[in-house]
Image 1 (cartoon, rainbow, N blue to C red):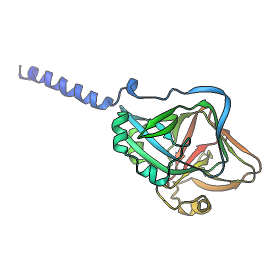
Image 2 (cartoon, rainbow, N blue to C red):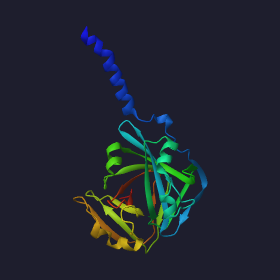
Image 3 (cartoon, helix red, strand yellow):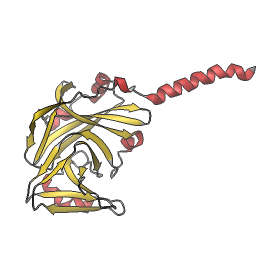
Image 4 (cartoon, rainbow, N blue to C red):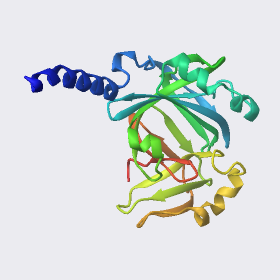
Length: 242
């Protein structure tokens, strides 16, 4: 009979554990409602400065990360740093909010047929271009050189005769830098990327390469694409044709 008394207690503990592990229910995660348009719209110029706020919701052992960026109205460094990220966490009901700035696009044109929604966050209007699902331990450690699949529909164009910065994995897959970061190295400018290869601690079999394009390079995500980051939080998109 003593064992039977412990069964309800064990069930309560088990239920509590499952509730904790579940995290935020999927239907409570405010995924963006992204429409489509017949008009191709975007931004051009190199570099294109911007900032991101990553709003993360833990769901079991995965984390759903909704990406907010300020391309529509770019904050100053001081303005971005002064955002109240703890208040944003409460406002969104997120498990975690990550300050992902300051950044700049290392490409010549970014376009999309999607109608990217604009959401108010921390008193500022942000674009919500997409989201990504990552294992919880990847988000905690932010381990570089880990491939992530991101949900978005973008067209990146790199002009002929311009430089591109690339990582090549041991299988020969090519990832071209889409955006550089000043989060880790606050003094990293676009001109300093020429020396980035000297600073990277590449995993075995990986290579860093700078190419000058002979013709325009167009990277189309088509709804989903693969990205990685190096240890300086520079982001690269896979060339799916390779």
